[in-house]
Image (cartoon, rainbow, N blue to C red):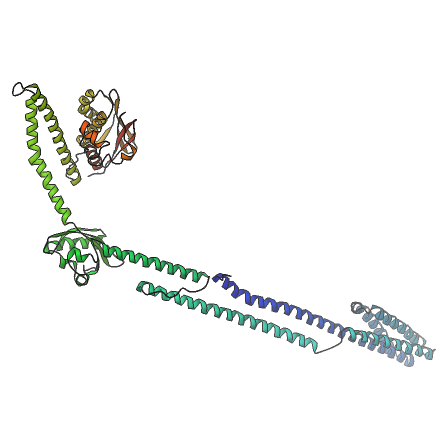
Length: 592
């Protein structure tokens, strides 16, 4: 049986209680016996006393009657009359005493004899000397019967309830002994059980406290406490938790030991208190060596102030540490120092990531973009202009084959320049260099300019453009939003079959402006819906690049422009039934 703490407490209460109940039952039995004995003794005493008193009254009555008959003294006559009345009252009042004992018949006979005696004595009093011998003989006979009847009653009473004066005190002494013994036994059992459980509980709690102190020190825990109560259950849970913590520590240690980045902890003065093993390969230093240094000793002098300011801000405001610094090494190493301040532990916890290669790639990227912008786009535009002039017979009539080839080359050149412009736009958007000039613009004007830009393309593809009439204003950079709509409309026209409709729609949705371009084209497979806004991603990459002459950057630019306005963009499509490209812009954008 599982003895929980609550059951042990209940047992601690029940054991003394059961002893007390047993003592109470025994006490009740003894008390009933003592009371019964006492009642019998009292009844015996009352019977004897009554019979003795009745004998006294009859004797006095006889003496007074005979005395009056001899002397004629009136006082004796009065005594006789008074005692006679007392005798009758005594016989009447104590009749119930003998009915309880079962002596009604004997007592009735005694009463009859008393009445006869009274009659004889009355005759003595009335006769005053006449027939004295006969009367006295009758009186003697009555007295003899009275005495024998009284004796018979006393003998029966002695047999029924013998008078034993020592029994009642002995019974009450036994009650007192039982009471005191029961109380003492209850206290002894309660103390015994309490001491047993308290020692057991104290011992197991001491074991648990020792385990609690061992856990943070990393020492092995003591053996689990035995039992099935709450303490044992808690101790098992504690051991399970300690096991989980140990496993978690092992995992953390494995992460720290195998991390590529340097993970470290520093005190308020930027002195290292912990550092991962990766410092050996990342910085060429040993862990023990770093634990004797502060962070500024491993940095170049020009990096001291930026890091010191970042640490100060983290302590004072709770901001995250994010700082680019240079290590004081032979080979230039640029690192990104990130982390946070812990007020509870009074430590900085940091991750130091080597960004040397990333920064190098960023510099190369900037140089490449600059080269494209200045050294490639300008010559290509010059070539495009020349090819356009050549195909338009600006330099005189050209052979048909030359004109055809020059026109195709001019088209390809325009596509190449558009690709370069898209690359430059994406770079500016990602670098945050493209400025957004917001102003209140009518939605209808945006739609008209967007439609004009793709109208000729739609006519050639035999696509009808429908624009919803909407009288509303939005706070946007109209040039960029028109660029988004033109791109979405151009794609819709390109991928829609002839003699279909492309719809440009708008509506208000609470605090947002909702724009949508709806086509009846081929649709987009479900597994590619999440990819269409990524760079260089197309539904059918080879076919679309060859026939539709797409670069795969248009939707990426649209996404960046919409997000720069604080909006969201997406697409709903069912393959074979068309697509709906939409974006939402806030009607009340935050001030920038």
